[in-house]
Image 1: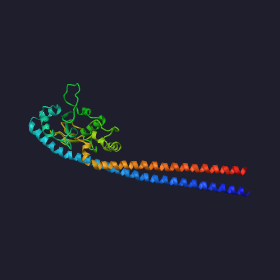
Image 2 (image 1 turned 90 degrees about the vertical axis):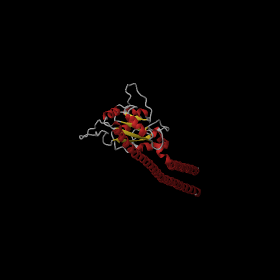
Image 3 (image 1 turned 120 degrees about the vertical axis):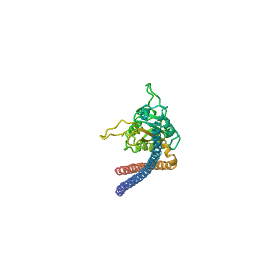
Image 4 (image 1 turned 30 degrees about the vertical axis):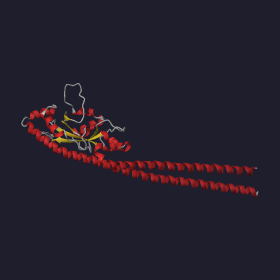
Length: 328
C-alpha cells in the first residue's frame, strides 16, 4: 500500500514537473519570438532609413545636374537665337522652311553645329550630348543613329525618335512631356540604351520606381537611363513671336525649337559612387542581419518545440510504466 502511494506521488510530481518544464520552455520560446520581432522592426526601420537617405542623395544629384544643364543650355540658346536672326536677317521665310524641313546643309544646321557640337555634360559621349527638335521633326542630332524608313522624306519625326531607345513606352512619355511642356514631371528621363543589368520594365516616368530597381539590382541599372533637359526657344513661344497658346487656351502650331540635353544618370553619380556604395553595403548588411536573426530565432524556437515534445513523450512513457506497475 505504501509503495502504491509513493508511485502515485511520483506520478503526480512528474506530471507537475512536466507541465512546469513545458510551460517554461514555451514561455522562453515566446520571449525569443517577441525579441526577434522587436529586432526585426529595428533592422527594418534602419534599412528603410538608409535606403530613403540614399534615394534622396541620388535625387538631389540628378536635380543638380538638371539645373546645371538648364543654366548652361539657356546661355547657348540665347546665342543660337541671336545667330539665327543675324544669319537669316529679313529672310525669315527661309528660317521657317529650315525648321519645317530640316536638312544637314541648311544655315540653321550650320549654326547648331557651331554652338552644340562640343557641348556635353559630365562626359563626352552620345548619352551626354544634346539634340534639337521642333514640335514635329528632329532638326539636329549627333547623339544617336537613326535608321531611316522607306519613305521619301528625309525628315525624322520626333514621335519616331523613340525607335533609337530601348524602352519605347517610357521614351514616348518623355517626348510627350517635352512637347507639352509638362511642368508636373519631377524629372524627365528615358531608357536610352540596352540595359546592362536585368530589371523590371519601368512603365511610368517615376524616379521612385526607377530607384526601387536600383535598390533591388544595384546602381548599374542607371547606366542605361538618361535625364532629358528641354530648353525652349523661346520659353512661351517661337523665335518669330508666335505664342504657344492663344488667348482661348488653344495650342498654336508654331515654329518652336527645343534643345534637349541628354545626361546619363550613372555618369552623374560617379563622383559620389564611394559614398553611395557605402550606403548600399549598409543596406546589404542590414538585410543579411535580418535573415541571420530570423534563421537563428526560428531555429531556437524549433528546438524549444522539439524539446517540449520530447519532455512530454518521456514523461508520458514514465507515467505509463508507473501505471502498469500499479496494476500488477
